[in-house]
Length: 89
Image 1 (spheres, rainbow, N blue to C red):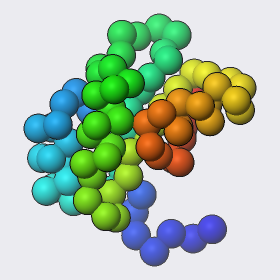
Image 2: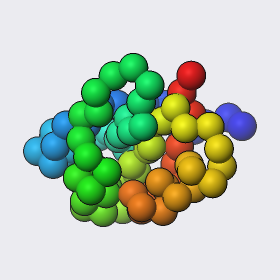
Image 3: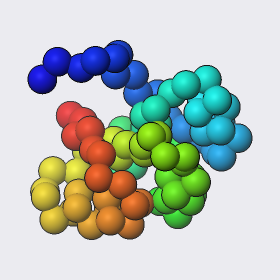
């Protein structure tokens, strides 16, 4: 698949203010690392879901996770309200 524009994801969103700033800067994909093996999460599931719900049309929350089963990943995607995922590790 050839993308018509660059695909840039900014990961590690810490709060709504940062998400808003990134959206104003033109970032379309905001990454939320959750269920990590090695690092502390930047936000809770609830905070990530709230930020994702607030994103304007054409902007997307991306779950970044070490989870490795489809059931667990899908449950978290549903909880967050997104269908974009980066499986890390």
